[in-house]
Length: 116
Image 1 (cartoon, rainbow, N blue to C red):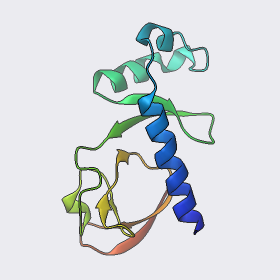
Image 2 (image 1 turned 135 degrees about the horizontal axis):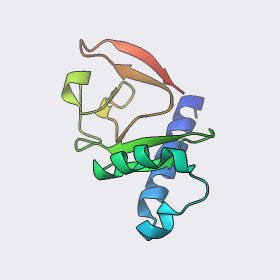
Image 3 (image 1 turned 120 degrees about the vertical axis):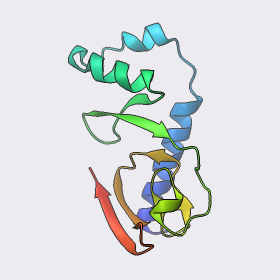
């Protein structure tokens, strides 16, 4: 199994596990792992339908949004709300996707995109 495929598998499984967790919003809001200074960004993210989560393998947070067209077939970035993944030719399940991914551009050209 290639390193990229292993990373994608770990990322997707992690996202699914986080999405399946039930939690009390008040309990989450008091989460000591999230610095108070990030409260406005977190509130804006959650008010817009996103989930404020820790970035895998980082000491930072990001607003994750799940795409409406996840796993839909695509031939270019124009076909997707997020990224069009080149290997599977399907729309990415979430945005942002951290790490390096082979994607299809708006013109349908294969490119490598790395997001840290």
